[in-house]
Image (tube, rainbow, N blue to C red; front, side, top):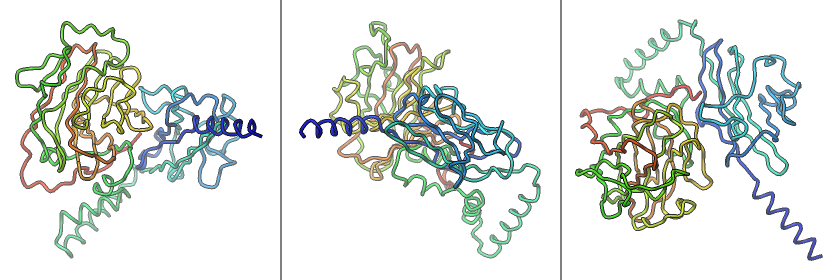
Length: 400
């Protein structure tokens, strides 16, 4: 009897250890009639999906899928309207495809009938999960839409006299997308692609400098304490990410909104770019074990780990297909809300938000790669234009 119970427990532990979840964008993917689009979907934690069952289907059409992958190949069972138009395709150039858990769907020759929800379902021997991706189709040949929008906009403005507010609400209703405030309040870690009002972010800008007291001996810090580079005597072998090359901000935050921008190291080969940007709980500076750099240990960050791509250190780790690679990164800490957001400043894009609960004071966190030949620089944010009332995220673009 005891042996039977032990066997059942072992099987249960095995099932738990191999479980995964399916991750998709939180906002609709937008594409034009006649174009090609990729609907992103990947499994987390990442694992080889070549031996899993992958099924993309429309509502209530599980047995008549858009695409069905099983036993290592695409199956012939398929909805006729998607035959020769659907395939599995990596979400970005940084993705490893099926071997990296990327099960994204490519659709060609889009029609208005393709608009709606697509279900991404992944199943293994002991675990399965599924999520919906919304696809919005626009028709460039329809010229009446803008004139109708202008007519209703003028009518609403004449009745209410609130031009700016009504235009903003009307735009959200027209696109079917959530207001910026609602996006920020979602309690999860996710990728968000949207235009950003940089001036609004810079209203919360702080003067950030590096604390020399805790700088690694292998780092060189400029006189103004804003630039860090790898020292000439650094003898790191260059294998893996050198987490010991860390530096910390001299500023401590335990309330309010705080924003800073960082010019990231660049490399002729993007797969050799290493950096780590985020925040850490004050007093947790001496951890040198890579596996211990977790939120439960007081670390929250976004990492570029060379050929291993981008990921957060959340539990479990979330791998992100960030394309193009950011050259200047904006960081917004909203302490009370428990949110740490990252922005691609050059592209004016909101990349992702980590939602958590901060406790005690936190400080900015910076990390270089041992092979980086360029510096990591904390930038001085220009003063924002006064009397700006625009939201942080102005409008949404295609997540494809």
